Length: 250
Image (cartoon, rainbow, N blue to C red; front, side, top):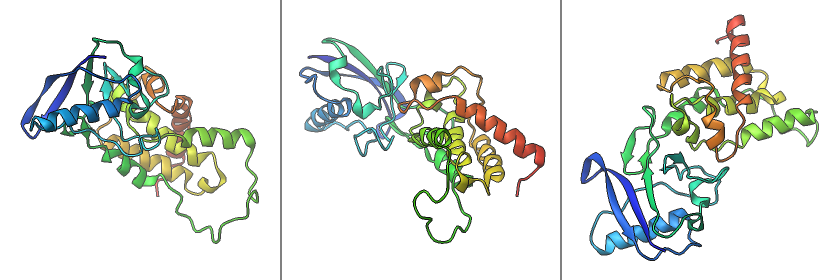
């Protein structure tokens, strides 16, 4: 099938950033979205033009690096799907597809569709870990964890940190990402020692990075490829209020 692509180009020969249109005449419907971009880049290289820069790694919906906005939606039109797992059979012959990078102050564009998402790394570094000395690894099942509690923790841990929540939010809020990381550890016994310090530090770092505030639009949950629930945001708000009330910041 034939597709018309309208792609954001920025950096290199496109210093100010602009949309550039391309035409792909023979797109196989069994291709993934990234394979389609590979074909486009082969076409550009053969013409000695600069290929489109985009991020990718596992191409299995695991790493979260395939971050781009497709026709106004992070990762494209399919629910619970990363860009690399989106296939061209969901498009029709003659379609025009608009492809942009994630738009957020905290995610500056590096080049074309590649953005700097290191703000997420700094949020994790501020407190999204367990650092207490626990000695040797415990035997399996030696620490009892209530089943529903473990399930909620596992669901939160499914977050791959792609940033779709930020791109979908009109305020560019990172509340869904941060709350998933807070919930993951707050719901487990291993995370209890640093529970209050963790949420205070991670929220402070989130604000420092320039992300916006949550206004309960819930676009983050709708566009999340791992379908992380906004109930994690409510949990993080409770965790934060409790920690702030007891003034345990160190």
